[in-house]
Length: 251
Length: 85
Image (cartoon, rainbow over all chains, first blue to last red; front, side, top):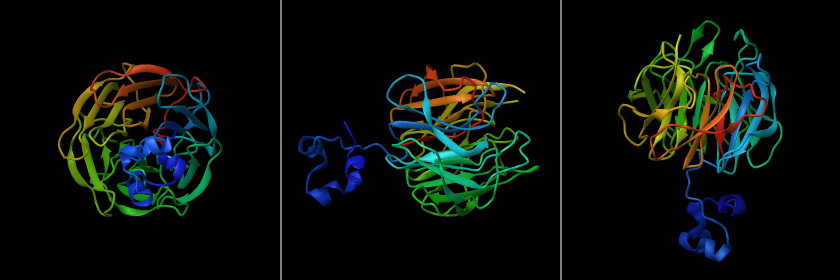
C-alpha cells in the first residue's frame, strides 16, 4: 500500500487541515496508508560509492534494496566519480544526498562535492553544490529528513571539527553550522527529528556530541560510547533509539 | 590494530552514555555503512575492504545482527554512506 506523502506530496500532519479527514480515517477514505514514521526513515535503503572489485575499496556504484525483506542489493546508478569515505542522509519519499570523500586511496585528493538522487527512482547522481570545506574520512553525515549535517573529516594531514548543513531538498550547497568538541574523522553521524549526534572518531574517541538541527552553533556533550572507536557505522535510528556505533577500530 | 563487532545505542531525546546493543555478524569489522532505518528494521552494509554482507537488526530490541543478503559486487566497503527514504 503506498504512503500518503508519496501519493499526495502532503505531509501527514497536514492531512486533516487540508482534507478535513482524521488521520485514523485516511486509509478507509482514500485507500492509502498514513505513514507516521519519521522523515529520516524509509522503505528504500541507498548505499553510495562502494568498491566494485576485491582490490578496489573505492568506487562510484550506488546500490539499493527494500527495507522490508532480506535479499541482495540491486544497482541504482552511479556517482559522478569513484570515491570513498564520503557520507549520506535521506528524506522519506524525497532525496538522498551524499557529500565529501576521497577520490584516490592516498586520501590526498579530497572532495567537496554534494550529489543527490531521487530515492523512489533509479539513476545517476545530480550535483547539489559543495560542502563549505572539502574533506574525507567522514565527514560523518546524519539527517532528520529535512536537513543533513556533515561533521568532522580529514583534509590532508589534518582532522577538522567543521560541521556543515544543507536542506536535503536544496541544490545550493552546504553552509557552516558550527564546530564539534573535537577534531575527528571516521566517526559516525546520526539524526533524530530534532538532534544530530556525532559519535567516536579518530584517536579512538568515545565522545558523543550533539546539536539541535534547528539551531546553528557548536556541539554539546551528550555522553560516551561503551568504548572508544573509529571507523564505526551507525545512524540506525528511530525517535526512541539510535544505534550510533556499529563495528569499527578499537585499538 | 583490532576491530570490533560491538553495536552501541542511545536514546536521542535525552543525554547520557551509550549501552550495548549486541554484536554484528562479523567478529571484526570497520568501515561499514549504516544510516538504514525504516523505523522498525535497521541494516548495516559492507565493511572493511572486501565485505559485502548486509545484516539487519530490529531497532526496538537489543540483540545480535542477522544476515540479510549481499551487496552487488561481492567486494565493498569504506563507505559510511547509507541513506533511507
